[in-house]
Length: 114
Image 1 (cartoon, one colour):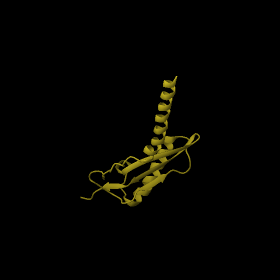
Image 2 (cartoon, rainbow, N blue to C red):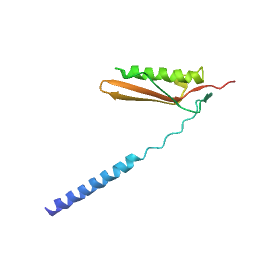
Image 3 (tube, rainbow, N blue to C red):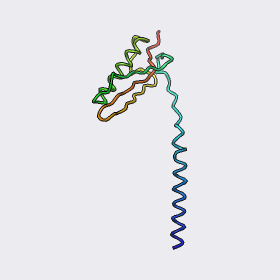
Image 4 (cartoon, rainbow, N blue to C red):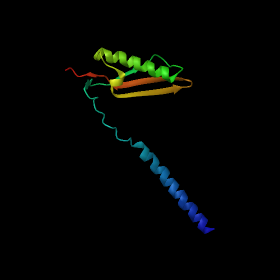
C-alpha cells in the first residue's frame, strides 16, 4: 500500500509541475518568420486593414468582403495593387453565433518600375 501512495504522489507532483510550466511555455509566442517583399515588387511601408460592413452569414462572403475593402484602400496607393501580390497577407475571421466578420491585413505591393 505505501508503494501505491508514493507512486500517486510522484504522478501528482509531475502533473502539477507540468501544469505550472505549460502556461509559461504557451505565453511565449513563436518567432515570427521574416517575410520578404515578393520578387520584382515594391511594397508600401504600412500594412492596410480591410473588413466588410457588418457580419455575414458565410465566412467565405465575409472574407471576400474584407478583400474587397482592403483592395479599395490598396488601389488608392498603387493602382495595380492586388491581394495575391500583397506582402504578409493575413485573413483573420471572428464568429458570433452563425455569423462571421473577417479582416484582411497586408502591405500592398506593385511591380517595380523598369
